[in-house]
Length: 597
Ligand code: FEO
Ligand code: CA
Ligand code: CA
Ligand code: CA
Image (cartoon, rainbow, N blue to C red; front, side, top):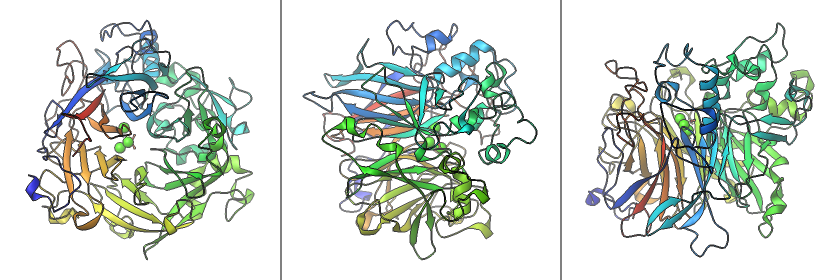
């Protein structure tokens, strides 16, 4: 298989055949071992996972559901930064039909008549995040039991609102007259790791958790509609009034933010950084600009929504991490406009500038941030095909934007940055900041790759001719750039019926003659999507997240509904009494060394 690669390909592993089955698979020469599963102990005293006897108290001490973003922090002072550290993991959402016995599946996912207060509370405890201390012993990663760093964050963990919108009237509720103290984070999808040692975790589809009708004439009607509220996918509002818009019309304004957490201090209060905007944040991957300011790229994962950038006001103090504690509270949020000539501009989202005025309903910067999407609409940002991860390559200075798909784009609405109508397979845009300065106002851009099957002409995919039939993919979602500057893309939405392959990870060449060549590296079990991907500092371990294994193939009309009793796979335990479990997998190269070489 290596012979099929152009000379000089940086991806030197034997390509994994594409397919779909109940198991996970990794390219030859690598090991892919389960590190932690839903329900495994995190905090001291966590009971053994018992799927028939779950409780909210147990779940609050155990690893949560649907691991998404993964970040790794070497332990300060360790002699091997690639063998001892903290792993932080987002728990994005819950699949009741796969988690709980006897619920079945009704009307897609909505209206679970069988939901009870206890089940809703288990779900709230299964959301949020985990902090784990991990150590590599004799080549194998282990969770350090009863670590003093171990932490579970849930949909009820006390958090602080900070930055320009903190204290706004529109953030005040019956339980918080100050608009500064919120309980929990929800739907945390991707995120980032900062150079000062904190974890950025991003609230995405927060609308799903709210139900109920706003009071007649509510000033929040336009705002909530723009974010798809109420989403009515979860039953929480039946048991907790803060998820009922009729009772607490401002509660949703306290979600949809980037949350910053210090993983080294389990007593630290997570902070929702309002300066970075409110929308369906996919991720928040950053890079230090030439002048020392921190630049964070963010996608808003919705059809026809936007790509954002946040630039701090102050430079990062690398010598003194504590000095950066509140650096994300002051800075400039911008949104991208991609022009037809291959140029682009970051449009500042600043109160008083352009249309962001009281006449348009923005009394101050708090209003602008709470309604970031409407501000970006008025500024004329480019409507994209569902922006997911946006990641800079520190070796080249280029930035990669994953655009996962948009089947609602009509032929008359295509633009050069979103060039396909009915875009089922997504694409990747490459941004080159002016003067290689990530804080510069302008950039050049081009489409790196249109995804999908190159053998089907109507799809219009642009993988290079060196890409094999195993090497193409659809629906790019998360991504990671390793120490060699190689781009690794994780997917969400491939399936046996849609693309003849499960989701997974592909290495994508971005430079030289091989540009646009992709190579298949990892495959998830059926029903799952691929999340995580995060490397240790020496690229010797690649942590990946397998999310919602066992879901039914939604494009296969013959597929039965997937339930606790009858999931599409029982990965990773394959025990008839245990449902499938979302899990973190540690990939290493057999014999050691850099993964994927
Ligand atoms: Fe939670 Fe945009 O994926
Ligand atoms: Ca996800
Ligand atoms: Ca995602
Ligand atoms: Ca996705």
